[in-house]
Image (cartoon, rainbow, N blue to C red; front, side, top):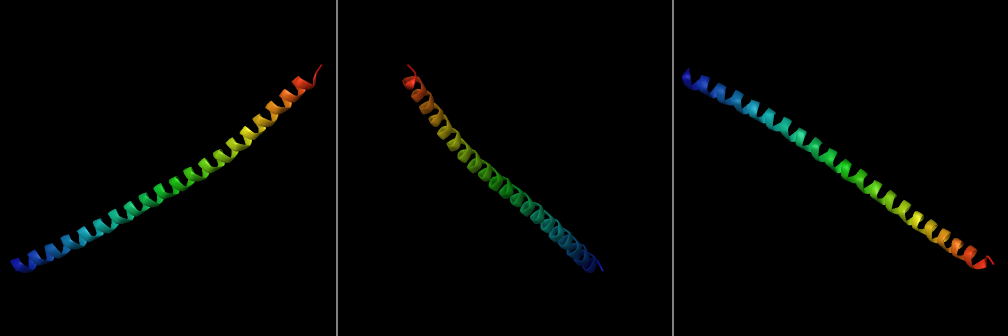
Length: 75
């Protein structure tokens, strides 16, 4: 009986450990997916900001040229 009880306890412990491992793996995968999404969102925002930055630089350049022209054209 002792061997059978020990075997049963070992099998139950193994099943519990497998379940805990599976749960931990799912949590880890979820965490990795979340970090991946955040990284992708950050990259998208960075691209948007770079485009906006370039547009604002062009606008500043146009306004600077316009002011320079107005200054030199005014008697």
